[in-house]
Length: 136
Image (cartoon, rainbow, N blue to C red; front, side, top):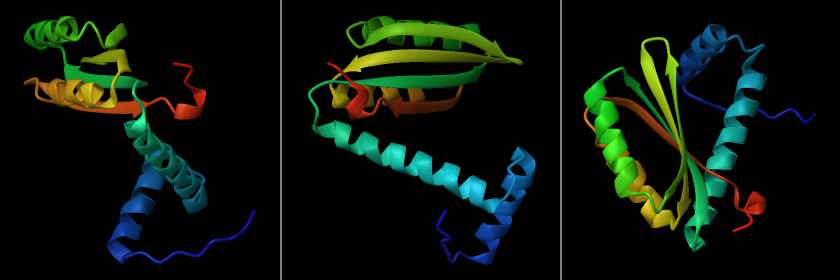
């Protein structure tokens, strides 16, 4: 495997080392390889903007709260043309919602933004399915 040398500020390196230790990585190389893979996958998602339709996974995390669940259910129903499947699960005291959405990239972006605007949401992440694996 080729060796790559990089430069970074000391405080960023300290943060990286703390992250590596906290998450059980075997070393900096392993953590940076994973980060690079994620960066490249995210960049591949940018090419989806030129597509008419795409598929995306939207992951939502929030503390158990019926009002948040009602708001998300309402949002899901308003976007029934995009949301093809959902999963609700529990992670400790939190609720985890996973949505599979299919449609125009701008409509998916709007759905993600509206999801983020729901009061009580802790985290919203989305991940487009790479174009090479889609058969739309």
